[in-house]
Each structure stands twice: as C-alpha cells, then as structure tokens.
Image 1 (cartoon, rainbow, N blue to C red):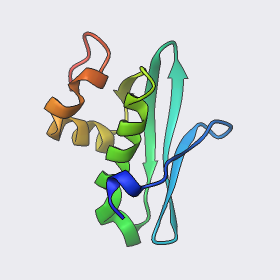
Image 2 (image 1 turned 90 degrees about the horizontal axis):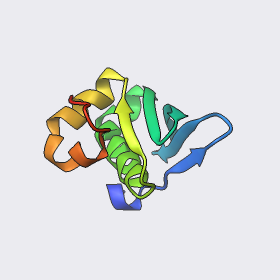
Image 3 (image 1 turned 180 degrees about the vertical axis):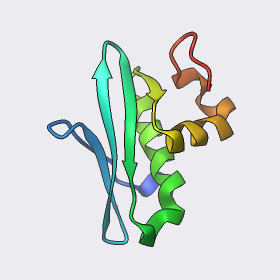
Length: 98
C-alpha cells in the first residue's frame, strides 16, 4: 500500500487521524484552534514503524485539502516536515519555521 492508497479516517470525536497498516491501528492525535491544526502525538506500533513516514505524509496530504495550517508540536512529525521543508512549507502558519 502506498501513500495514495492509505485510507485516512478523521475520528473527530477522539480528535485523531487513523489508518490501519498491516492490521495495526496507527494514530496521529490533534487539536484544532481557529484555522490551525496542532499535531500533538503519533502512535505507530513497532511492527509497522518503517511505514510511519508514509502515514505522516498521507495525513499532511489530507490536511492540505482543507485549507488548514499545520503546527507540528510532536518532534517526530516536526522532524518529518523539516526534512521535507519545501514540500510542506505552505502548510505552516505565517511566521512559523521548523
């Protein structure tokens, strides 16, 4: 399964994005404020850890369709965005650098 095929579910009640990779539930928790979404926590099991970046990429792609700005407060997600700075700089709020 590649990033485009990954089915991302927005569980608004629990405020988390979810997907299943090889039978394992993967979660990115968030909070929303104004037009910003704060990505606060990521949970990916050891079994599918090598797919973590695919999950982050799929969630960021989903958020980019909503006109929201992303504030990555989780170090793993911030690191991913930093490594892919050119691709995701438009998702960051004005004045936020990572």
